[in-house]
Structure formats: structure tokens, C-alpha cells
Image (cartoon, rainbow, N blue to C red; front, side, top):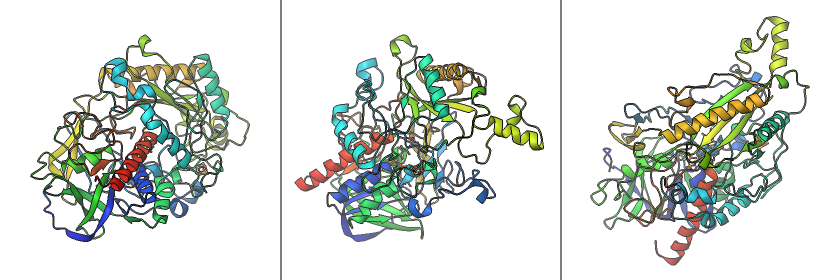
Length: 569
Ligand SMILES: Cc1cc2nc3c(=O)[nH]c(=O)nc-3n(C[C@H](O)[C@H](O)[C@H](O)COP(=O)(O)OP(=O)(O)OC[C@H]3O[C@@H](n4cnc5c(N)ncnc54)[C@H](O)[C@@H]3O)c2cc1C
Ligand code: SF4
């Protein structure tokens, strides 16, 4: 129980399942459980959103005085399909002294899947058993073979393009054909081949062929604004909408969950939440509760669900709630590629994202750090927006006035290439979250305080990223924009949380003394409580996590449906 005394008005109806959050994890749970016939309620802290009506797709930058530039509410640009951000008014979090950490939170139906990057990578067989391979961190209690059938089903349900490469730790999926590489990507591929860096078609959840009643992509490249024709994956339009169509889903927006309630036997009875439109306390009863509020928010909810039976927070008898949290390591290098100047104007249309990427290609035996990273590619001549070619005076003979300036814009437009590394962090004891005893949000709910520390493993890995990206730019005949960051600058490592792939805090394990949930993401301490977001991840892999969140949520939801049928919940 948090320091806001519960003054809730209990609802008489008891739902089969109450899901907290409607992002990737919550959306999949709502989809599977309603299709299985369960009576489901979703509590979503954010506002309603529908890509087909609310998206700014195909709006020209000149239609806005801001030209699409960012605002505080829309840090990724005013046309971006995002409600939320790094700072949410009235919803603070805190950082322990010395901690550099950022926390992106969505506050809308569909969560972060409305403006995510759609890079949809499966974890591979090694990723589930890392400790067995290098002795660091922990193994998952499940293996790739346990999750593979669910990855296949997610591929078929949602749609993903890619190519079968038969790489040992980058499993093939059920792929739609990938789009062809564009000019700048062909140059990247040449450089990668020269340096023996594996470079293959990217794997994104965008339809290149119609699927399940959804249209194929028409290559407008505006995925981050929300796709009005529904050709990319969002939880909102691909999972929640069909769940609503079953008539079995009640979706409550502006509903900020603050506590999971339990009975005297320790079973979850439902969720207490704030109706943000009125500030009123409410309570919903349910036979099963599924936490999917995003990994770290789910830890917060468990901490705040204290009772005589669970004085350290619900499902926290192991003391590991909030622990083993990670974010992807990341750093970027951009460069000027003279070969790409004065390009012949041509159709550069593509999907909203890269057409090529580089999976991890090296053997750690020859390196001074464990685990790996993949490389994401950006640059080329995309639709210009606010800030395009800012700093043109830094190009050779750039800048100028009048016609000379315009000519220079035409010359250099699209002659930039960039690489972003996305690598695996190993959980460590100095990186965790807890409740800040002195700070509450606008509804009086205690907030999280973060502790974050990178280890040498991550610094060395990021140094390697920087060196590789510079070598790639040089191999393309180009020049990096910035000097190599020093050790004192952490080799350019992004602050924790900045890559927005936070995971852990309710990790999965066979031993209730060292983990929060079992292999079905079911709380060891509370059998009708499940976690369906990134909280149960034991390790992180260098893969972006959402495809695995979706596959695990589907697996957990099928288990819930099965157990409900058997009457064990
Ligand atoms: C710009 C960007 C790019 C990204 N690119 C990629 C990518 O290319 N590939 C990839 O794999 N991942 C990517 N991600 C990460 C991806 O979006 C997340 O992994 C994924 O959305 C996590 O799903 P989730 O369900 O755990 O959380 P979310 O999608 O964040 O959903 C959580 C939902 O819970 C709601 N909520 C939170 N607290 C409460 C509460 N107390 N009560 C009720 N509701 C609550 C939130 O409002 C939100 O709607 C990206 C993220 C961003 C922001
Ligand atoms: S690029 Fe394709 S998927 Fe993305 S918004 Fe345009 S049509 Fe939709």
C-alpha cells in the first residue's frame, strides 16, 4: 500500500483478466486472451490514439511553421506519433547521485509501439544461455526452442520482412520479401564487404505484401508518424483493434494503475487506479492480473503493492524486484561521403527505416570484451525536415549566401551516412531501481529512483563500435564528423536508458529465491499475477527487445488461457 490511502469505489463486475498497459506486451496479451474468449479489461495510463485517424502521415514540413521540428511534448518532431517523452509533467523519477539515466515513457494507447523503429530481431539460441557460454550473468530457464514457435506465430500474425541467412545466432523468421537496398545502402554494403562485416537485409515489422487484411507498405518512409494504412506494426491498430472487435475487451484510457490488490491468501484480486480525467480512485476486480506497464514501471507497481503479507512489495520475497535491469549499449558516428555529393535526383522511397543492417559478426575469443552488438545504418537523401543540413558551413566550400547557398544544399543533401551500435549490457549489482522514499507523483504515488553503472565490458564494446564505424566511413571514402571520443568520455556511450530498450526488474528464473517470475512469467509468490513486458528478461542480447516481448507475451497469454480453462488460477 503506498502513502495514498485507498479510497476506492470497488466495481461489482469481476473480469477474467486485468492487463495494465496497452503497449507491445499488453496489446499481445489483450489480443490472445480475448481471442481465447476471456473477458478482459485493459487499464492504460495514456490517451486514446488511432493511426488511421490521428497520424500526421503525408503532412509536408512546410505545412507547419515549425517545419516538423521537435517540441517538449514531441521530442522526436511535431509529426511524430508520440505522446509521452523523457519528462512527463507531474510524473517525475529520480536518479541516485552520480547516476546518468534517462527514462522514456509513452502515455498513449499502444505505448511506445506507435513510434518505435520496428527493428524486429529474434533472440538466438546463444542469447538464452549466455552464462553457460561465457560465465557472466545468468542463463534463462527457457531456451530458444521454447520460444521459437511463438516467434513464428508472431511473424505470421504481425508480419515482418527479412531474408533467411542461416546465421547461428540470428535465427531465420517467417519473412516477407525485404525491400531492395537504396543507393547509399549499396555503398555501405560495399564497405562492409571490404571490411568483412556481415551486412544483410534488415528485419522490420513492415508489410511488403498484404497480410491478414492489412495493406502493403507504399514506401512513404513516414512510419514514425503512425501509418494510416496500417502497414507497419503498432499494438494499437494490429493487436488492440482486433481485440476490441471481439467484444470481449474493455479498454479504459487515462487510467493510472497504482497498486495491485491482494486478498488474505495472497492472491491478486484486481488493480487500484487513478482516473486521470477526474483524479478519482477506482478499483477493478479480476481473477488474473497481467502487468505490462513497461519493464521498469512494472517494478514500480510491485514495489508500491505493499501489504502485511508482502511488506517489501508484491512478488518480492526474493528481494530482486527492480534488480538486473539493463539498457542496450549505444553510440553513433556520422560522416560525410563525397561520393554521394551531386547525386542524380532519383526515387529514394523506402520503408520507414533502414533496408540493411549488420548483425554481430565476430568471435569474442579474439576480443577484449564479452557479447556483441549490431549496427544500424542511417543517412542518405530522405525527406528534408527542420534542421536538415544544419551546419552546412562545415562542408567543404559549404555555406554562403543566396544562390551559392542553395546550390550547396543541393550538392551536399543526402551525402551523410551514419552508423549506430546497439549492444548487449550485462546486468550488474550497481544498476537497479528502487522506490525513492521522498518523492511522489502528482497522484501521490511513490516514484522510482535509478542507480546506473556501466562496467568495463560495456565501455570496451562501445570503443570497438566507434572504431568499426570510423573504419566503415573511411572505407566509403568519407570522413567522420567527429573525433574519436576518449576513455574519459566513455568512448561516446549513451547514458543508461537513452536507447529506450530497458529490460529486467522482474526477472525470470527457476529459483524463487533469485527471481521474481517463473518460466511462464508467473510470479513465484502470487500465482494469478503475470508480467508480460520486458521485466522478465534475464539477459538482454544485442537484439532490440520487442519481438521477444511479443513472443513471450503470447506464450504467457496462451498459458493463462489454458490454466483458466483447467481452473488452476
Ligand atoms: C523511438 C523508439 C524507437 C524504438 N525502436 C525499437 C525498435 O526498432 N525495435 C525494438 O525492438 N524496440 C524499439 N523500441 C522499444 C519498444 O518500443 C519497446 O521495447 C516496447 O514498446 C515495449 O513494450 P511494453 O509493452 O513493455 O511497453 P510500452 O510499449 O511502453 O507500453 C507500456 C504502456 O503501459 C502504460 N502504462 C505505464 N504505466 C502505467 C500505469 N501505472 N498504469 C496504466 N498504464 C501504464 C503506458 O502508458 C504504455 O502505453 C523503441 C522505442 C522508442 C521510444
Ligand atoms: S513507409 Fe510504409 S509502413 Fe511506413 S508509414 Fe509509409 S506506408 Fe506505412
